[in-house]
Length: 288
Image (cartoon, rainbow, N blue to C red; front, side, top):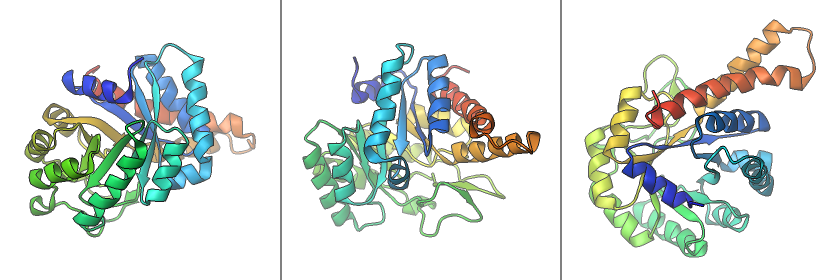
């Protein structure tokens, strides 16, 4: 059975990307699993600190394990501790047996980000993949009225190849998430910024490790395709899933105004998420 790092490196070689999708409940997990099963592609399930607090750190691990045991139609489902802001929370996920953990020190001074990320890498002892984040792109997966304050959007503020090379060398991370024009969340009344494809290529060549694109919701399909060719091997989607969940549930309530049974209403949300994830997986894996 391939490890997550082997799958990511294979994706890079084939010029495709592994889809990373966040969940807050069983509805989203069911939908994402169904899409991956139909297309027979590996996926990463992400749970942020808030999502882990709601689901349960070990409960999330158990749920993903149960899906891995239930079928041979999916290469494998991996579990990632998304956006972890403290060393202690990162260690908690590592101890719970997650496949990967992101230490997000993007808002910290570079030296502090390096020091704390290095501590997480040392604790992981190569048993769990560690991803570092370099460059602030916001922190909320929601519909935005304006760009996140302080987010690196202008070219002069994006992650540089030299900083990326230094960060990887000094921390020993397995994966790197840079700021390349991407932002968390989706703008309500305007398209999201375009990605800097040239910078992605420069960072990948300098860093020497696979790159992860956060804030994938709202990015144009052409940018995704170009980013994958340039060096992006994992793509995070969350806001689109949350939006689909809400819109699906609202449809269910509108069509069944007297219904009070959750398992009769939640399939509407599940279907909307499934359609969103399926569309993204087909794009990321060159299936459309």
